[in-house]
Image (cartoon, rainbow, N blue to C red; front, side, top):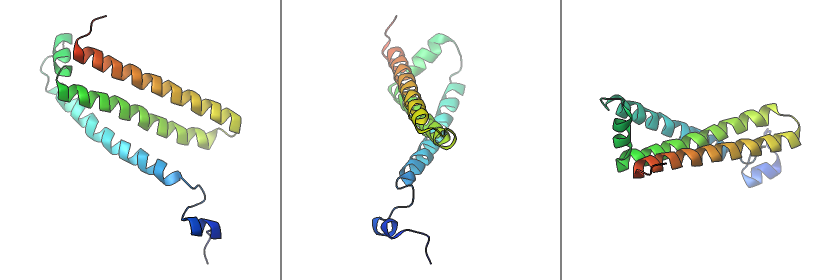
Length: 128
């Protein structure tokens, strides 16, 4: 005896139809954040001095600036995925849920773009 519907069996999907890709994306970004977070902490700890010029020199390295941009982007995406799950579970009114999810996605997109631009401005030496 199976609890799956005949349509679900034929299509190979569960009741949610698309939750596995979201689940995998959240796990993959979590692993990426562990690796990138360790890189970030270790490389800043090995920096020597913590003055502004040392951090700017560190960030002007192509490897460090590239990894910092990836770290910002993956952090924002992982946060959106996590908040989406929470909001879908706890906001019961469908219209409110859509509005809040849209605002959260816009907010994190703005934050990611702002963070990436800050890293790139520092990496390329653009002054204000």
